[in-house]
Amino acid sequence: KCRSQKKILKKGIMSKLSSTQEWKPMQVNLTSGGLFLARPDENLLRDLIPLYEIIGIKRVSGQPNSRNAKKPDTEIWYEQQSSINNVKFSKLTEDEQTCQPMIDAIQIRTVTDGYNSGRTYYLRTDAEEDCQSWVQSIRSAANRAVILKHAGPGMARKAQYRLAKFYHSTPVQIIVAVFIFFSFLLNVFQTELIV
Image (cartoon, rainbow, N blue to C red; front, top):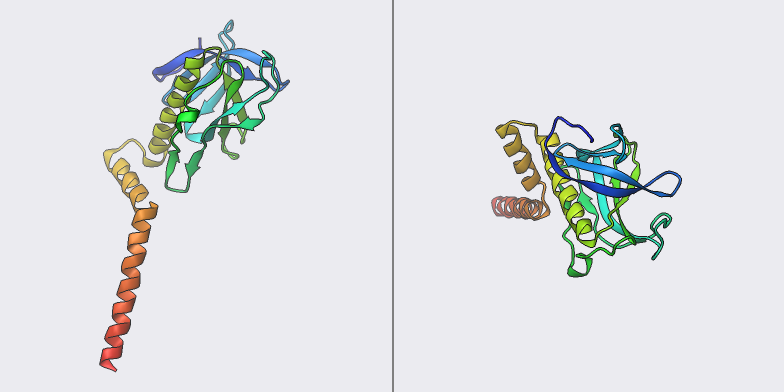
């Protein structure tokens, strides 16, 4: 029911925690650009989460055995690790590979100066296997969206972005620092020999 110019990567019915702290069913469509939410019985778009504005995704635990559980409170899964030029989601451990139905939710945090003004979303599925699938799909699409946002559509810009990401990585920065330090020591040694 949610219409988008982009190809739908994944769609399904999920529950969304509303502002009144109630879980309401939503038709959720994941595209390469965003997460589109609409009521299952309507043709109107209710909400949109641009994927490049997602700064954190994790599974949170709600109150057990309650279909109308309030806001989840125990954080369990993973968060996005980000810096200016490096956006990457951390890997899940084996203990974190499963979701329990109707107890666990997916928390999605957005940037404060973006389309959703830093809003935090809570979504959940009725089926265990859907939870993990949605988390992986959103995480993967969000990573691609961030790369495209920073790199742009051209091959040269993508290569430039990847090279900058590589250069700003911790191992490369350590190697560069070591080379600079040894260059400094070599200059000091040469100066001592001349004097």
